[in-house]
Amino acid sequence: MPDADGAGPRRDAAPSIALVGNPNCGKTALFNALTGARQKVANYAGVTVERKEGMFVSPAGTRVTVIDLPGTYSLRARSPDEAVTRDVVLGRRGDAEIPDAIVCVADATRLQLTLRLVLEIKKLGLPVVLALNMIDEAEQQGIAVDAAELSAALGLPVVPTVAIRKDGITPLLAQLDRTLRLAEAEGLAPTPSRCGWSEPSAHDLRDYHREVEAILARSVARPPGAHAATRRIDRILLHPAAGLPILLALLFVMFQAVFSWARLPMEGIDALLSLLKGAIEAGLADGPLRSLLTDGVIGGVGSVVIFLPQILVLFLFIQILEDSGYMARAAFLLDKMMGGVGLHGRAFIPLLSSFACAVPGIMAARTIENRTDRIATIMIAPLMTCSARLPVYTLIIAAFVPHRAVLGGWVGLPGLVLFALYAVGILSGLLIAFVLKHTVLTGAREPLLMELPAYRWPRPRNVLLGLYERGRAFLTRAGTTIFALMVVVWALASFPAAPDGATMPAIHYSIAGMIGHALEPLLAPIGFTWQIAVALVPGMAAREVAVGVLGTIYALSDSGGGEGLRASLAGVLAQSWGLPTALSFLMWYVFAPQCIATLGVVRRELNSVWWPVAMFAGLISLAYAASFVTFRAATLLLGG
Image (cartoon, rainbow, N blue to C red):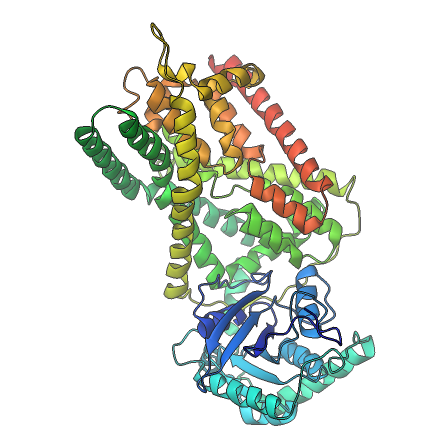
């Protein structure tokens, strides 16, 4: 409940501190170090798009609540994520209290913009501690920061930290104890009356700039060659002619690696699943339980789990590129191209996040200041190929694309096809953005302004932690959502049993068979079978579920020329589908918005029912049209 003067709800049990700072200053890494929480730590602006909260116990035994707020350059809040930070520290959000103290987190190698923010926050009247993060990197670059002089100039405690080291935050913990104890002793209750704030004028900003320059001159000494290595690398990677081809080459290598590096572990998982299936068949008599385990669980969930190595390889590359600082450069490289279709260069980061999942990608669009640019980015985010599509793509590619080298023998054909599918999604998204920005979402395009982080060697711990979290999320999804759906699908595909004298497999007489045959006339013009129709319905919950459903359906129908229960799913599809159907199915998955969670987050982010309805109707129509054209053209050229 709010208190009498309008502050947000107060927690009497524990004082709270808020972490505030510029994007990419190490705020989330410090949050992880304080709370032990496993959070995403990425080396590009905009990774923190929501408030995150955790707890830690200080050296004095005090339980402290920590709030990790989105990165911001000023309390003026020019984008939705910056508005979250402003509203929390000013007590304008009914779901959050004003923090008892603020920790301003600064990249010690780049202090200028953070110090301007510190000067703004000082005027709120709250206790403030400045954490000089990445102080080890500053020392390696020869940058000398006099913490005592900086503290005297700012009039607040300044503590050097190294958030990625086990003992790198010990001085900060001690200082927080002192700050919170002093605030309590002096009765400095955080209330809106003490947090009076007005947006700084242009005159105020000039004054801040002059004050920051004077403080830096007194407290920071930089060698002549500071950031020289970063500038040398940028001369190549950001070169107008060479930069974009290098980016495309990196992406191309990434997609090749998805197939080549993951092949052996996938074969290992397949062998284990085959052994498990054989053991179950040998140990259980024929009946419903055996069918559930072999056809429902192994045939369904197992056909999804086998793609885990490919997903991990994809995210290994993404994690390394993020941690190295290259992703922000990619946004600048693509700014001109995206500007040609009316998008902001900052849209690259949300769209890149959508390759993992459209949900965090759409949420990351909060970093885009202009509303029409933000809506256009959100509307095309589902066209970026998320990791849930990867099992579908690789299944069809494995079934219909031979493993052979092309282009002189150094490029694998499966990787080339996968790269082409990603490219179709990206180019289609850009085309749709062009149409939207020249029709319903018109408006002047704003220039891209983004601070480029220094290049850093990716931290192995961060990379491994990111892969662990991605793998755990995938397996959790496979073991919960997909498992539950597979049990339901197995039941629908197994009951009722075939009548006496039936001449077809039992699944044709089941509830699933009835549903599939009822939908088949609607989908026949695009080449889809009744089995595909059954897979599309639960696939609305999660795209990769379609792979498991196909595994269950074909295992029960034994429609792979008599070998459906023993051959791999890819082999069964190769025997059951024609190439035109396979190509049509791929086109459907490039465009169709088969993800309820995505539509839900669009509704929440844009506070409108109209936009998710428009997204669903538009993309489902586009998917049907693309599949129809693909199927008809492929049938004409290749035959059925």
